[in-house]
Amino acid sequence: MTSNTQNRDFEPASRLDERLGLSFSKISLLTRALTHSSYTNEHPEAVEDNERLEFLGDAVLDFIVGEWVFHRFPEMPEGDLTKLRSFLVRNERLADFARRLDLGSALRLGRGEKSSGGHERDSLLGSVFEALIGAMYLDADLEKVRRFMRPLLEWLVPTALDELHDPKSSLQEHSQALRLGTPHYRVVGISGPDHARTYEVEVLIRDEVMGRGTGSSKSTAEHEAAKDALKNL
Image 1 (cartoon, rainbow, N blue to C red):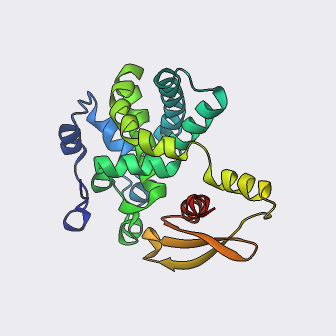
Image 2: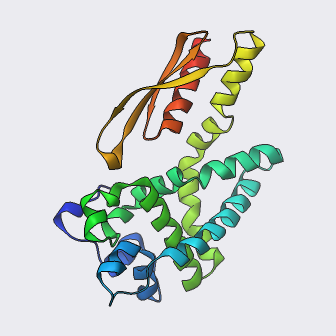
């Protein structure tokens, strides 16, 4: 779904509830989950911001995702389960979930955050997704959160399994095994507005460029460069 925040301030919580089939019994709780502190600073009459719900949602997600990977991959060792859970609850992944649901269009932001592209910023989208999970848990129960999360987690399974074994660690181990030394990463390009940066990174081994990668963060670009270098090695 594509956000259309330029033509409206935000999508009402009741409309989001209907669009996503959330069936909240307390729409005020959903409204609170979508309310950033910058909005309440400018609208004292508004409901409380979503920071406490974000805290709760973080804890609920840790449990739900941990439980899901445990049952989804019954033969996977504990170390890999931990890596997989960590990948799936990373803020960048939660922002991916938020974009898939187009939560940005319903996010209530203050003027400054809105004008600087807050509706598309990973940090805010990840936080509003956590707040939504916290609100859903309070409004219903863990089972409702499980049902809501299951298709989102399945959607990310291919990407998660691809990232399970950290390509940067694998590249370092491979490079050292070949007695080529430790890989080094350097940023060679940054493009895009502040709220939607694209980084281009090269990885060098013995001062030779072995791989290149791009991503929405330096870390993601380094991972892509490491994967490219592993193919080249």
